[in-house]
Image: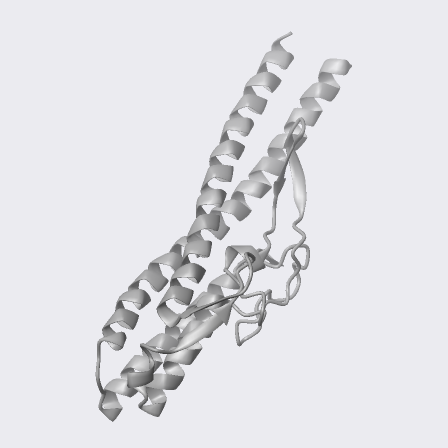
Length: 220
């Protein structure tokens, strides 16, 4: 009877691991796509910083591009598995990010046990994973892109190099250039993507160990 209960507990851990892994894989994919898109956008930002002037057609093409990047980042922040949003913490039934990139989720995450003494999140604090500026509640890279779009559309490219923004990504407010703020926001997303990748490997290892232990118990 004790062995049966032990096997049942291991099976429950593995069902949780399957749930967690499905969410982790989708979240990691969303973060990977976000990083890839933002790295390409960074190249464009540097080009713009070195551009003296744009004609009307070029300015529209550029602002449309940055706007599409901005909207894509917010879309990835609102990724779902089934009916549940991934990046809103415990608040899984409403989009974590409003259309302007403001975080409206929770910072507390849902966790489930996947082994004795090991709990793993099934949903994630989007404030961390998408580098939200604590001063405004908006995704930092979205804030920067909004400012760049404004300068491009107003024809004030010359102001881009000297423009600054005050942001706080959890380590206190600092006033930096737009590119530096963009880099800080991107770095935060990359960091949490890496954390998620490590957690995926841990869950895979624990699931393998649980399966082996269950098999051994059934043979006793």
